Image (cartoon, rainbow, N blue to C red; front, side, top):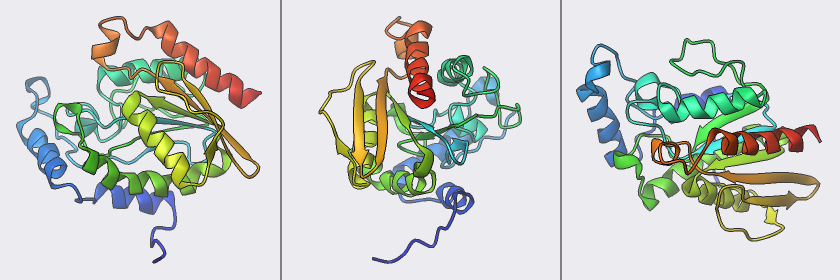
Length: 235
């Protein structure tokens, strides 16, 4: 096996931004960046893969599905500039993992405390639906990022069933064993073990408008998940 030339998170973030492994996603992100949404027509879109964001030695890792076409794909930071991000960072702020509740752009002053946010797929996909092949191709970035941040990790929150599956595959690839087999639902919980390390996976409905507008996910429900993460870390 050839050793990875990527030695730290800074190099990893640069490599992610330059990735062109999925032609469909590369084309889509560029097309969206050119066509733009009318309300953002005067902005310069990011239009390429997006790296993780937050603490470099986190105890909490949050995994989402993929960047939003006019959110992260526009601003260059995941869960930034869209309503899903409004919900996520409000909950993280309430639980003490973020210094502010809003995420507008990369220069808005947002900082995460003891937490990092990443996505299973690093490019914005058409209709928010990556293919299985795209998910598997992008999993190498999850594996690499994990190696740089795993030492202090105690809790992983998966936002949605897609991220839940990606997280379970990630644990398996890193040699962890699940204490139980649990299907995804809001509030799902699995404890993973490896030697002397224990990490808890929590499931939450994704804070997409499809879930928040219909009431499937409420602020109280999301707060409960991040509150549970805070207790696990503090305990």
